[in-house]
Length: 210
Ligand SMILES: Nc1ncnc2c1ncn2[C@@H]1O[C@H](COP(=O)(O)OP(=O)(O)OP(=O)(O)O)[C@@H](O)[C@H]1O
Ligand SMILES: [Mg+2]
Image (cartoon, rainbow, N blue to C red; front, side, top):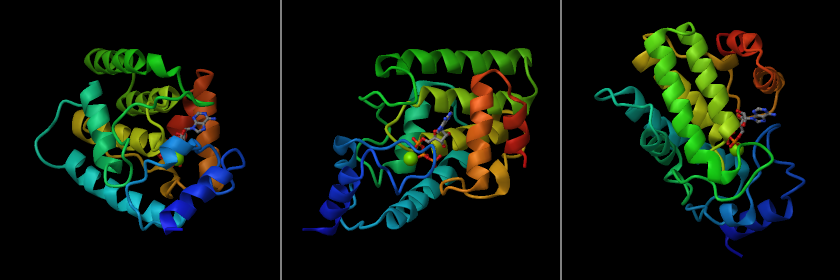
């Protein structure tokens, strides 16, 4: 069996048990797992490395070049495609299944449009300090959960691009470690998002600059 097939089989078999997923990571369903473009990837660790390379190219695009209008669905999807397009066939496409986190799939476009309108309004009216606008964007974006995977990394990059290119602020430090793997920082991050779900943004505000 080719390596990628054995990897997919492994992913499918463990779907539901998700031993290789970090705490709070969205499991892929079998159709999504079959959307892997790289036929030579054998392990989650390798997959993470390929994704990370792809994300670095996307970050160079997002932080460099001419300033782009980013508060619209086209940009949101384009950034996801640039982050994961070398790895996943469905990069840049909204998810077509419902997950245990995120809005109903048919609500994704509506919720994103509302979020973009809200952020533009907060900036224009200075409703919140700049850091809080970026933290609120991040929180709402992961709560909508537009994509099958990569929502956390995509929403962190969106917040950082908003800070640097629109709000004239340095990027967040996000706990100072990569949040992809499980660990104390990831737990603190998920707890901060859960507090924000209840309207308390203080832990998230503290976390993003820690
Ligand atoms: N209980 C929760 N409450 C709010 N947000 C959550 C919760 N669990 C996970 N999340 C968010 O969902 C993200 C995981 O979704 P997904 O797997 O699509 O993103 P990812 O980029 O692949 O993961 P990662 O953030 O590990 O890089 C987390 O990073 C976090 O932002
Ligand atoms: Mg994930």
